Length: 43
Image 1 (spheres, one colour):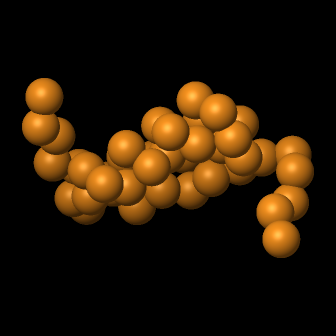
Image 2 (cartoon, helix red, strand yellow; image 1 turned 45 degrees about the horizontal axis):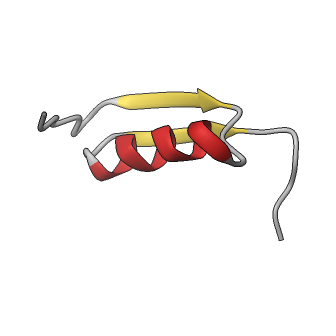
Image 3 (cartoon, one colour; image 1 turned 135 degrees about the horizontal axis):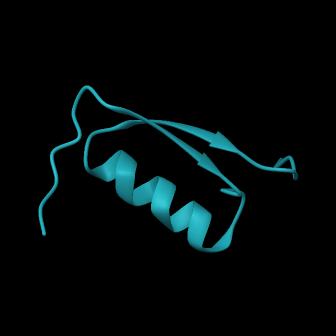
């Protein structure tokens, strides 16, 4: 399924790793502006 989420904003919690990270990446690839929230800081 091809989604066009251009101009949409998505908030994904639990996006540090796993399925949350995958969902955030998929939404971004579909054109959404993605706000990610997690408990762990990378870096």
